[in-house]
Length: 152
DNA sequence: GCCAACGTTGGC
DNA sequence: GCCAACGTTGGC
Image (cartoon, rainbow, N blue to C red):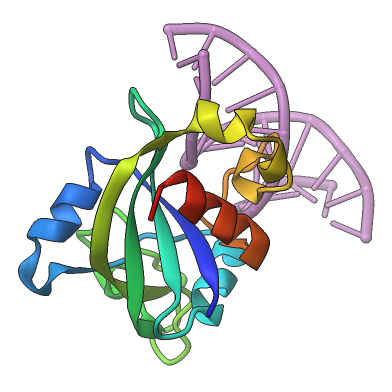
């Protein structure tokens, strides 16, 4: 199993929103960065996502989700009325992918400050200066550390 | 609102 | 292929 940190602005999609969705499932639309897209394409059924709230008063990990559908074309890239419309994406070779994730559970808020304070997590990609990727891999050791801190 | 960091675009 | 300009992200 692989682990990922997946960032979302809670004002757009929060962990509570996921829990309230039909089937407790949402698609991870709107990724428009090639490296992040490649990570989406590496995701496999059953992978665990740490759901991270960003651009909000208390950024940090707020819950867990599970990958329930592997990468497929992000429909928003073909919708001219959509914020994420990409006129340059070929219909026969879609540029952007999405996955479906399902709610697993909420956790206590593991804040960014607390993540930074933990020496063992210094290598975590999301803590690196200038990191802006919305989807990043987490190695097994770091994942276990996170799960421990979350008391899961 | 500010600013650092980074990705993308487009002229040359 | 270079690089300046611009846009976006995201913490503070």
